Length: 249
Image (cartoon, rainbow, N blue to C red; front, side):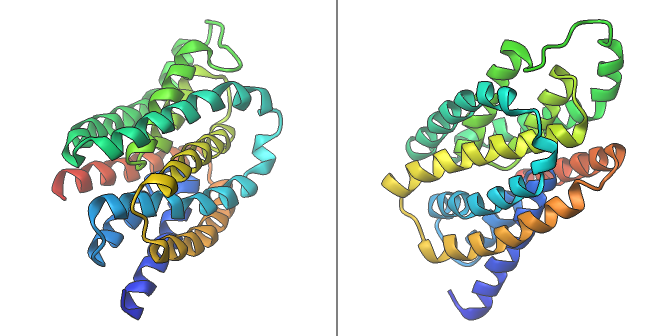
């Protein structure tokens, strides 16, 4: 990479880390940037995934206050996220890239819809008992989101926010904090797999990692101060952008 290309990848890492912490879909900035500087698609995908892990960790640290009292919930969902990430990573390494594109678009569209209708559904289901940990449906949803994240990653945060917002009785900011932990588990698990068996560009990993660490910190400072309606609007807007980008690339 030329110096200017390195600057572009670093800047993309900052933006991607911030967006991942607030919502998700930061990969839709970092992944195309790595393609633009000449990395092959699979190498760009795995390098991007590994590089975003440090940004996820700083995002989790920034949301530590909202994570209070969620340990039990996360311990129940963590195995589903890890198992899904391994499955998605293996799919990435063994299937053509085009196979999952249509599914990615559908998942992002569904998750945006869930985020939009979540307040209305919550009111409609107010009289029904909700489980503190979301029950088996949320566990299966975390498994599916983990597989999606292990394969490509962009939009898994939106999917998790939509599912948790409906299935558990919790404030949106606390849901977002839990989402950040699960996304780190997914990306971290996939990153270990990729580092062992995939072709990784470690220069790209370093640049994305440095940028995403700063972006994750900044994203947490901004995101956790957003009112729920504003955060919901940001989620939907980024989801729509993600769909358009996937359909036009």
